[in-house]
Amino acid sequence: MGEENPSPPNGSTLPKRILGKTGLEVSALGYGSAPIGDLYRKLPERAAVESVVTALENGVNLVDTSPFYGSGLSELRVGCALREADSAEVVLSTKVGRYLKPFSPCQGSSFAGGINHELQLDYSYDGTMRSIEQSLLRMGVDRINVALVHDLDVFSQGEKLESCYQDAMGGAVKALTELREQGVINGYGVGVNEAEMAERFARDCDPDAILLAGRYSLLEQPALDSFLPLAKDRNIGVILGGVFNSGILATGPVPGARYDYEEAPPEILERVRQIEAVCQSHETELRKAALQFVFGHPAVSCVVLGAESPAQVLSQIEDFEDPVPAALWADLKSENLLSPGTPTPS
Image 1: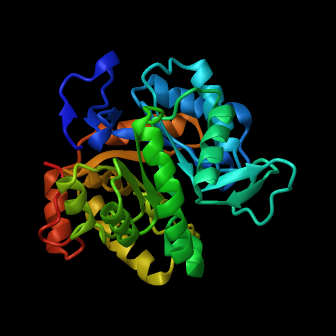
Image 2 (image 1 turned 180 degrees about the horizontal axis):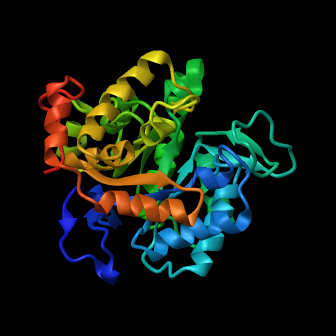
């Protein structure tokens, strides 16, 4: 967790870190495949697959996906990319908590496209096993490295959260613990949008890795005081998603900028304007600062970034590798845009 390998294999310029108790070496940047499930728009098949291949050919070795992303479309496209690229060292992460019913049409999906299969929310033992089996078939692989219980949070489940959580503790966690003990998976964890739920899960069972989306970013750091220290103390690998808070830290406070998957409210736009002004004073792009900021915390093993094209993948790698002036972080703290004790890249 957080410990860099000084001589990354295959000549990659991306450093690798150990992912918690899994023992897996993962690249600092991972590929987040929600966009290629047609999250915001329907993507051409070739561009979607080539974006994953480009990532794998340029040092990215962790690919994170889910049955939820386009009702299986993301996993299908990941599988195509794995067959095209050298995937011997790829670390595959997918989710459980939903399986697909192919004889029922998809209803109420938040994705712009995807496959017309119905998603069935199910955190039970049997539902988890079915989800894993379907994922293996869609991707055409015989192994998944990390399985994450998906969307155990208020944001996703609302009033159903407590019943879903209890189902997951008695079902999904039991199933994934068995699969880990049998060596079928390297580790399990949870993928959530809330730091409080990430911490609750970490305290209630024995996860190897946790994917937290949106709650540790240059804009906001609710995971800083409690969850991240707990993860570091218990050697839980932390994968961060949503480090651009659904887009606004990549686009800046432009009209229609997204925050938590919706149009950003005025107070968020204003705070981002202030952060962007500090970045501009150091001739640094906002998205570059947002990406590099999160690596200042020693608990972070990997950041997964979504990309819709090979060009976006290469741009993200360039942003990671081009250093940000250290004075930028000091100025953000002096402007009260970061708390004084927030760790920043050295």
